[in-house]
Structure formats: C-alpha cells, structure tokens
Image 1 (cartoon, rainbow, N blue to C red):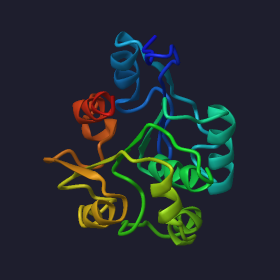
Image 2 (image 1 turned 90 degrees about the horizontal axis):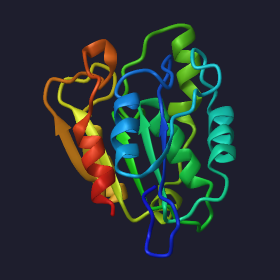
Image 3 (image 1 turned 30 degrees about the horizontal axis):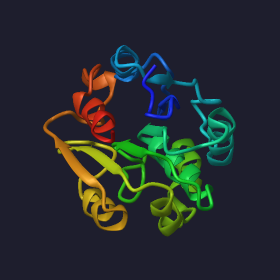
Length: 196
C-alpha cells in the first residue's frame, strides 16, 4: 500500500465514461500499474452507464470516496471527467491530492441527436463553479487526443487557463478508449505518479 510519511494510504478512484464499465478501455491496466506501486485503487461500475444521470453519478462517487483528503486522487475519462469536476465542486473547502481528466466531457463536445442529446444536456449545460473545483485541488492534468471525434482539443486552453492544468496532447488516439485500440494510457499513470 502506497503510504505517506504518517502512514495514510493513497487512494485512487477511476471514473469511467458513458456506456463503459470497470473492465473497459485502459482502466484495468491503470489499476494494475498503480496497485503494483502500492496504491489502493477503486474502479467502480457507475450506475446505469447507458443512461448516465449527472446527480446520481456524483452522489455515487461521493458515497464511494467517503471522507476525501490530500491522499485521495481522481481519474475521470470522458463523462467520468465531468463527474469528477462536479464532485470537486461539492467539496466546500476540502482538498484532494490531484486530478487527471482524460478527454474530459465538457465545453466543445460533438453530440448525436435524439436520446443521446437529451442525456448529455444536463452534463453540458448545467454550469460548474470552477473556482470551487480549483479550490479542491492544486494539481490537475488534462489529457487530450488531437483527433478526438467527441471532445474538441480546443478545450485544452480552457482547462489550462481555468484550472492551471498541465496539458498532455496524445497523437491520433481518438477518444482515448478501447474502441480506438487504447488499452493502456501511460500519460495517465505518469500524471498520478507525478503528483507525489
């Protein structure tokens, strides 16, 4: 178990995206890599992943984490990144150790029509108080792909300016998911390890 000098364990929570689960994409790989380095890693199956509900997901994550502290780290992919942002917004002065957002579902996002648009609307059009998000951590890393078909790389400027986030741009890795052949994401591992 990765511990601090006072013996507190370091916990990482990896939040998957829409229509994904704990076995998707690069999450099992990242979990293994972190666990071999002594971290306590949780990759939950988020509720009703085919119809993600903003409030349900944030409440689920908050209950899972329990009492956050500076040895708590978040990794969010796609709509899981939006979940992480909204969770941080709710912390009211409590701080966590660091946040990795991979292809964060916020800002300029390509949407399909119909039901998908209806599901996405609360996630994209309910404002987030980014001053509260920034108050919840001093360390942010945002990972984008230069050919993501869903999340615009142009969003990187917003995250860099608003959260003082370090930006990583991956080349030709689409939406950073298994459907695009991405089953490992070393930049996410390096980001977490770099927080210590």
